[in-house]
Length: 169
Image (cartoon, rainbow, N blue to C red; front, side, top):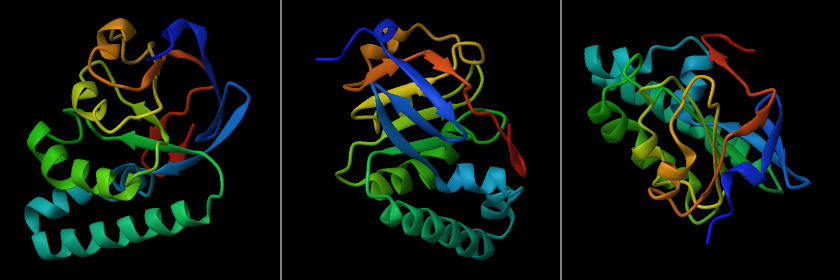
């Protein structure tokens, strides 16, 4: 059973956050990592699939390495699951299964960075503990999302991270 979304707050420090007194170490997904590094991996996968696959494999390796270094709870950052970056087919075909594999049997908090057209219905499937998003940029009803996921939706956020190519704000 999920807790009412309005009862929890995620307090961010960069990509890491504290939920109910527990710190969750922030880890960028491969696509989020590409965006933060200014790499157009989606374009590479379309224009030069071999090079795109090589770059994506390196991003997955970086992500996997970081995840193995964390001893406590994770906050897995998902960005790019929206029309400005990927189509639903591109996100589902290239990135969603990688996210599933990287998360494996763990139950990290999932932070979804995106605008009003973010594929929250797709990403909600990988969330098992918490699904966090910023209601200022993605005004979807948390009660609607709670019907899509077993995770607890959290929209009460402080210092929510924004992801721009090459930086975090």
